[in-house]
Structures are given as C-alpha cells and as structure tokens.
Image (cartoon, rainbow, N blue to C red):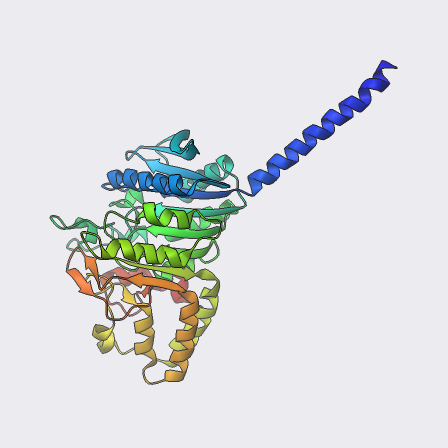
Length: 388
C-alpha cells in the first residue's frame, strides 16, 4: 500500500527532473560562442593582452545574454591556456578551463583537439572565431623559410619601423596552413558564422575560397594591419551580437584607424556563399582571356613586396577583361555580393615601402598575376585549380 502511494511521487519527481534537463539542453544549444584564438606569434603577446582587455570593455558595455566568450592564448612558445570571459556585476572575470604544454596547434590533430575543447566547454547553436597572429595570406608554411630565398625579407622582419601583424608566429614551427584550419574545423563539425583574421594579408580570394565550407563570412584585411590590431572596444559589440553587424564593423574600423596615430587601415567582409559562383565565372574568364604581364604594373598593388605578391582582385579582373565591358559588368555585379562591405583609409601601410595610396579597392586580393618567387605553390591552391 505504501509503495502505491510513493510511486506517483517518484514519477512526478522523475518528470520534473526530465523537464529541467531538457530546458537546460535547449538553453545551451541557443548560446553563441565566440572563440578568440591567439596562438604563439613571437612578438605579439603584449598586444594580445590589450586585445582581450578591449574585448572585455565591449562586453561590459554590451553585456552578455546568450553569448559565451572562450579564449585560447599562448603565453610562451611552450605554454598556452584556454579560459572563459564571464561578466559578473559589471566586471569581467577570466576562468581557466584548460592549460596546455607544447600544444601542437600547427598540426591538424593538434588544432582539431583545441577546437574540440572549445566546443566541449561552450557548446552552442552558432560559433564565430577571431584569429590573432601574423599573417601571409594563402602562402603555405613551407614557403615561410625553407623555400624562401635568403634575401627575402618579410614585413615582420623590418626594424625601426611601426610594427604590423602566416597564420601564427615568425618561424615555420609556429605557423599554420589555411587548409589545416579548414580541415580542423570540419573535423569538429564546426561551421562558423564568421572568421575574423586579425592578421596581415588575410582578405585574399585564395584564403576565403579555402575556408568557404567552414564559415559564412570572412572578415579580414587585404593589406598589412598595424600591430594594434582590431579595435575590439568599439567593434566588439557588433561581433558579439546575435546577428553580427558587418556594416557597423567596417564603419567603426574606419573611424578608429582614420584617427589613429598611424592612420592606415583596410578591411572587408566576404560572403563565402557566393564564392563557388565566382569561381565558375572566373574559370570562364580565364578560358577566354589571357593576361598581358606587361600590364601588371598598372594593377593596384596591396603590399610592399617586390615583385608584388598581393594585387587588388577587382582591378586585376578589370585589366584581364580589357574592353569587354559586358563580362566585366557581370563580374562586378557578382563581386558586390561577394564583398558586401569594405572600407579603407586613403593609404595603407607597408613595412618595406611605407604608406601606399589606395587608388582602386575591391576589398580582397589575388596573387594570380604575381611573378614573385613565392608563387611556386600557387597552382596547388584550390582557387587556382577550380578557376583554370
């Protein structure tokens, strides 16, 4: 008799617990996780701390609702930590989630593990990723030193000039290939709302195309970016929003850098959903038009290297199409969809040549017409393969 009376109570408690668990899972799945990934980059650590503090300033201004902010930071060549930024009574707190010793973040296995840790600690319905380090566009890591000519000087090698920001550090053991990032994200079943590269030269057609299946948008600079990096205190609230305001991000970036002590900055947003369509059009253009190498000097350069490595993509295609305004206008219409938002100051900065005037600007680069010795691996890029 006692069992019969207790049984309904047990069932009621079980039902209550089940509902509580279900509600918790729904709440977790509705969260948005923003992952700040700051691997060892040799001489940028102090700037990373500033970037994190600026993001915390944005968090304090905006508040946190369903967002979670996870940071991976390398504090030395052999030590890294993953922590969460939370907001309590108007103040930000950093809670260590995991410490790493000699993390192999340059390998697919190592980066897959790090991304998997982030996903485990902060499961979400949507994810975004901010990557801070040095950058060199699509160029593979093996090119950084081993294949480079001894007299080749990178933008980060110049001394006594304002610093600017490969995907990683200054030497190959701390650099990561874009294809490794793409595969590591895919291994975790991750598709980002956006990937923001706080690095030099990452607004590149070749980079975006490699990442088109693992992110909806790419936010990046087609040129060098000053060592300060992104102004997170002003753009952070737009990055953390449920629907990121890409237009406002570009506008705030411009407002900051047009008034900065070094007033040089370029930024663009790439909508990766149009990149397959763009590749098809470029395959048609490349099959019908041949590039006159003598015209390369007239295309807008986006770097300070000699020969140029990164050219403005829109200007290159206009030069390639020549007098065929019909096909170029078709291209231009599509490019406006690919790059819905972009901005630039009057000049961009290069460590080797100083400021360079922006005369034509599409927001994204290509290395297609380059004759630089660094182009040896260009035919292996997915973009080159699919557009020829």
